[in-house]
Amino acid sequence: MPWIKSVGATYWALYTATFFALAIWESFRPKRALHFSTERRWGRHAMLLALSGAALAAIFRVTPVVLATAVAGSRFGILNRPWLPFTVRFVMAILALDLAHYGMHKIFHSVPYLWRVHQVHHSDPDYDVSTAARFHPLEVVLAQAAYLGVVALLAPPPAAAFAAELLTVVFNLFEHANVDVPPWAEKRLRRVVITPGLHRIHHSEEAAEQYRNLGQTFSWWDRLFGTYLAQAAAGEGGIVTGISGRRNERSLGLGFMLAEPFERKPETRKEPVS
Image 1 (cartoon, one colour):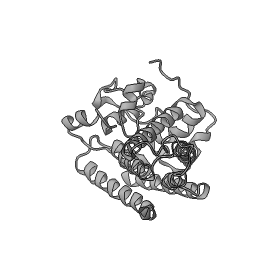
Image 2 (image 1 turned 90 degrees about the horizontal axis):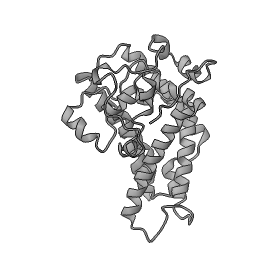
Image 3 (image 1 turned 120 degrees about the horizontal axis):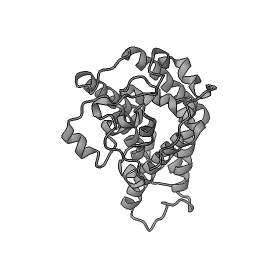
């Protein structure tokens, strides 16, 4: 499979192209006015992304696609069944890997210490495409470890693992973008995928709404497991994103973001009863 040699270059080319396309879109057709310096936010988020990438490179010697290739001959993989048509295994792998993202996201919101790590992402005092890069390196490492475990268990076709990676990078950026999606398009898209409108509700400072719309790519999982929320309590125009008490300049500091999970008095929350 010679295409595997170009996986890294393809991933980052798509990341860069998608980021700048969405950045241009939100510059000319923003959904909401931002309150803090775009240059500072983007710069700090880029540094956090670089630290996360360095942590991944230092700890893991394989990527999901490389691991999928390595376990392709395993007789223990759930999807590694020669009698299953390739197309069926491909589609099942895409769905299963996205479901794994949904499950991991829900765990990061439900387990108190993991929430302390994940709240770095939510404590962005504004909300735009650069928020997609605002993840603590510890969360990135833990999520990658869990995801690699899922890949080893499933043994998906390497091409499906690659397609899942590309879907993840596109939708992670898209759903965080401060873009004005036409209402008719938003309505149709959210039947299948997580849109900026749905994910903005998830970033509401209302704790109960942070447990909603947890999907990575597909919105089906939220509908299936009862975490789907079509409208915020405050309405589309009334959503305040971020974490209460942290919508300030201090939240933009790299030192603050790195230290936030280790604060002595983290915010405590209770998961709402469905």
